[in-house]
Amino acid sequence: MEAGDEGVDRVVDSKDLQKQSKAFDKLTDRVEDRQLDSSRAQSAMASIAASAEAEKNAMRMREKELAAVKINAADVDIIANELELDKKVAERTLREHKGDAVAAIRSLLH
Image (cartoon, rainbow, N blue to C red; front, top):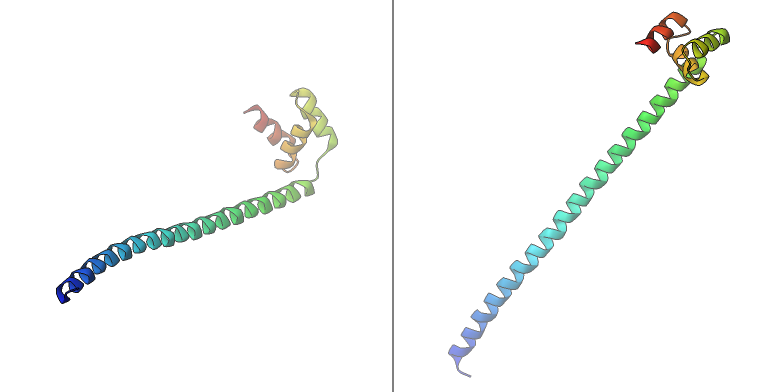
């Protein structure tokens, strides 16, 4: 081989290496982007889970508050019978209105 031919091979090899390097960089960039997207998705899912847990805790607290309200069983029966409701609905509405039968009935009628 002549000295000039060897230089041509090196230039060609160099161009191939550059192309391969660019292709490899594009490939790794996509993998890194996917990893970033994956971490964003995981953080979003964690946020959603935390929000759902907070909502469940708030509902439990509300149920405890409602359970602590003292109501008159006769009021539950009157509301259920007169408005033709299930006793559970009448009781819940009465508890939500802190045992005030008039307010509970108004709420159910409007």
